[in-house]
Length: 477
Image (cartoon, rainbow, N blue to C red; front, side, top):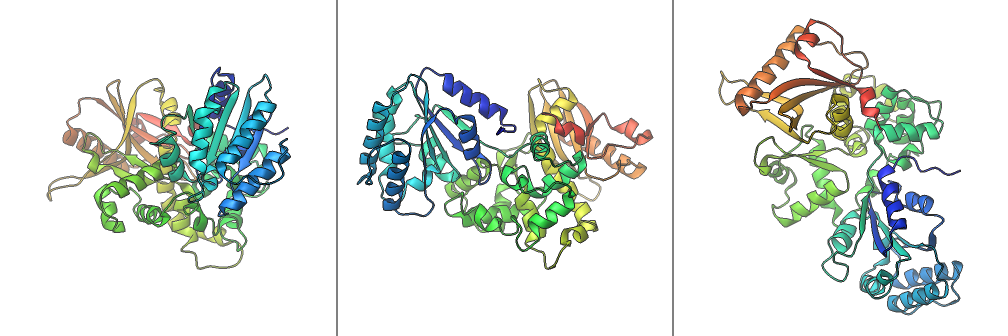
């Protein structure tokens, strides 16, 4: 039996749509390889009565030929292709009228942007179909799906024409969490411990299509080596297609993520402009928003500061790993990664990569801290010393809580339990002191350690660490 791992929120929303007494227009989008098509086909397989998938880089004529073939294979009678998309949707309407069951029925349009070839009239024809026919039939649930995030956002979600405010449900599929990744791997009969899964996750992320290629009986390092460094590896050249398949003018998106990959703590908007040469204004805002919507980048607001001081961070694990390891690799042969992962560079890089994992698992961290029900804001904070006698400080991130507390979070990724020695204890104490002095906060400050292998219990950890979040906590559902 086919199983859809995770996606609990999305499955619940699709169930709501199917139980609705109104016509529904559901927009599903997300990055390439995220599992959009699989989710819809599997979860709604008993309700899909018509499915059409756009053809990549094919002509108007070929798209219409494909429509005719799909309609015929799913019960239609016509054998020749329609002359226009208006005619195509008239054919679909006629077929639906002849085959009107009592139950709810799903019309699934996959790779929707590929259907809308230039000057094809597809989008206006679909608008007319939805507004004059489908939206009036409570049995119809129309699902449109696409990987081209910028197109889906601007042409459908933020449409100003005939589809303005027509979407009744919006689902953005994100990568699997660590918990969902573990479930998926176990379903694939891949047995790895939490630390190995975290290592794998920091290289390829929670992308179902990538995880599907993980082989049982091999370590995280062996799988990374095979997927990312072998000539035939799935992810060796995946980056070449990733952004191009998602965005128009993808060179701008690639320029931004490349700049962010070079600065582990992130860049402000002005620093991004300087690093990329892109002009400030609407275009930069649009590109950044598209990267955020697609899950590649997050905006970390500077605590209690103007938005211009926000840090933009690249959090897509595969992109980070590609820039730092795959693109720069000059070695050939087998076991490349086994050699690289034994070096000091990998150990240093893991700290930053694990910090990003923590940032994408804030709900799990809050649950471990016992504050799931507390309103919070996550932010960056640093202070640059202004004089020789001054002290600067920086925390990995903070959680500002509405119960008058602040967690200053430090992240450590080590194979063995981390030891807080006297020197680091002094540094932690200084960070907390500088933070209170420079922010003037009157809230309680809790130094919080997020660690992969836990902490050594000693006088320094007891004296300074108020909360400890372990790797296993990030695997909460």
